[in-house]
Amino acid sequence: MLVSVIVPVYNAGVYLEKCINSILGQTLRDFELILCDDGSTDGSGAICDEYAARDPRIQVIHQKNGGSSAARNAGIRKASGEFFSFIDSDDYVEPDFLETLLKPVIRERESGNNEPLIVQVGRNEIDSSGERLPDICVPPETETFISSEEFMKSLLLHVGDCSMCTKLTDRRLFNGREFPEGKLNEDFKVLIYMLLDCKGVISLPCYKYNVFYKPESNTRKKNKNDFSRVFLDNVNNADEADQLVKCIYPSLKKISVRFGLFQRLTYLLHIPIDFMRKDYEGYADIVRYVRRNWLKGMLSPYLSGKSKRYLTLFAVAPKSVRKVHAKIKKL
Image (cartoon, rainbow, N blue to C red; front, side, top):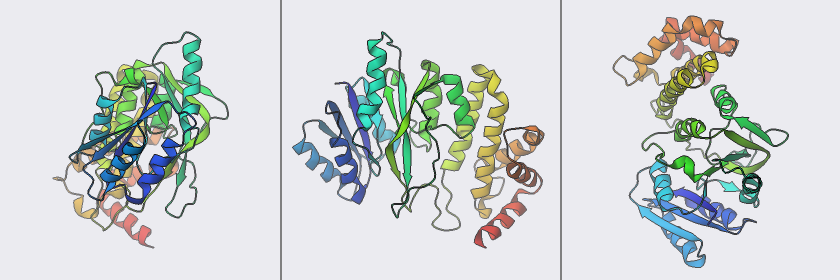
């Protein structure tokens, strides 16, 4: 079995069947599909079982709810493929998604290159009304090999794609490695360490993965005191990336500082005002970091003028700035 497609499923509702159908409709027929039901309570688990009864390529795992990473990790342990594709249960893929990703792999193998590979395609961002959103990450105009250092640089500049869903990944890159459970933006954390074990990423000039943004996304607030843990996880990921830069990619140090400041500014622009206190997890350390690295931010060619203005304001009076920002957003 060459490719294992792993889909974490949790209360996927009306989106699940479209996702599964898009996978079963692939022009590449030789793959296994592992549906990891992560304790769904809306009947999604039963839908998985129904599909498995009709197609021998499908295996279903049922487990207690542990989050997307736990479901993916369960799928990895069960998978038999040489390469992994991760697809979220509310997204869908184009019919030649797997075939397109696999072609460079076959070519590299035939040329004698047996090193671990990562291949990626572009993604369409679809809103709740079905409209296509502006690109978050723009694929290259031609097939491009991006070295590990250059790919890390693109991630730190927020122009690279850290999503594992757009990629076909050599299973050897998961040896001794799993997705961090209980965390968000877990793809970034896994990917930056994978880059140490391969020469880089083959990026293809096409859009084959479709991301569907639901109104109840991780970062969308339902009330004024909703605050997704993704913002703190992003800050922690920035610190881990900075440690790798110090040890492996010293030429990226200034870009890494920019990344750390930008992630903290994003945190401060979203944290509810009621949580801006010294005893709230992470808050005091984030403010200290902004103040300590203010001058580096001002001198950085990688931060925009707008970010520098916010950096200065948050370094001086974070809570007051947040209150003004909240009023501006309301207006």
